[in-house]
Image 1 (cartoon, rainbow over the protein chains, first blue to last red):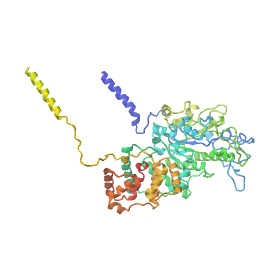
Image 2: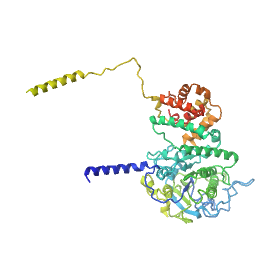
Image 3: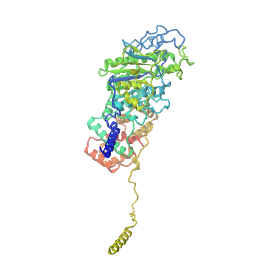
Image 4: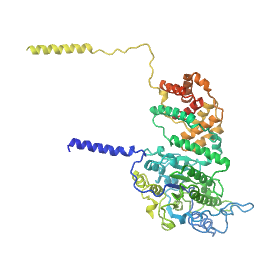
Length: 448
Length: 165
């Protein structure tokens, strides 16, 4: 081969290698390396700050208030017997003490017995936003500011870019719009960013009174006679604008996806008016409302990944009894959601892995604020106890009834979850190769 | 020797022709004002905040200001949804359905399409349409009897350019 020909061939090969990943229609940068473990993932950010003592360690009041009563108030998620005295975590029957009636157990077999529990995991960040960032980006988020999008790519972006999921395959159901939650559906990373972000919805507002006022009277346009001309005129306007100003950034659904989401929004208002919304038996306020709408999102779109964020347990700062009630309800809601998927969404039943982890723990020692039972509240200001959480996973290809680690043997990081989800969808290597995940993180499957 | 003589003659001839043809360009003026051929009003690189978008949209469509209570509620709803373009379309469509939008009738639109299009560009984009833009809309609306001012307004209000200033 002549030198000129050799140089030409090498040049062409190099150019082809550099360009090829970007021209794949899915936008995938690296080849898929693993087999998929499940078709769908529901990832519960069991957030708000959960102490090990009242959750996985099942100490009820003995680990916090100096009252020697232990027991498990999360009996849909964890194995263990419920407390039998001083019950304040349940619902309130008429003329009975507040919270004195425990919510009946929903799952015949707990998620722990159906799956894999890491009872002692290190939370890499002790704050809400930093903690949620680490659960969604797999990075330590040490330089993460508030009121800005995550610095590192989120699991949504990894999956959309490397696995080729479309926008409506990827949902983030938030508990509200405070604490920068709406910014967590995408990073601002130049290699990923909003182009690969998730659909975000905060149901308490979108489908609450404000949404009812602003969205529920939306017109339904005839698809051919009205909608198509609107879309054509808008396309012309957008093309004219794009020529001068470039591509407009933001989470973007395709035209068909958009119309489908609008239909979903209409359906939610109709169901709300007719009482047809999915609801956990114990009610529909706070976190239970968020979980109920997450179920509606899953039933309608069958997303590849649905992330749902809970927050009510953060009331522990000033109301320990309320914290116990929120914890008990969150367990009820998660159990209900799992049951709902298996019974009401046949396309996802038996094909979905659920993963749940708190974003941070809470302090070992209380603050001085006492509640109606004279019990002290707990903050999360960064002591060692704040860095202790758990991870629970169940579904196809997840070992059942297995515990990895113990109170004296911490195994796992909260940053493992991004790699775990990437592993489930067969793109773990692509995510690792991107180089933004906290060093030392592993897929939970690799920690077994 | 004769060859050298001819060579000198050729060089001198070329030099004379070159000097004679090196004339400075005369800039002609025709008493016409200079006009920028690039429309700077088309360059909008600052994104409207949710608050700005809603108050401008409401005023554009209703010809009156939005109440502060309604502004806050609408802003929160926009924040509660990830795809801003999508949720803005739903809000526009909600306004269209409440019957209070001020816009020309279908007859008024079709009587003078040129003016309607220019006015619509000015109303939503605060600029004059280019000839290409005007031609597109004239042709498109004339060819489609189903198109109403409402559909045109909806397209403009949900277009990318309306998100910027």
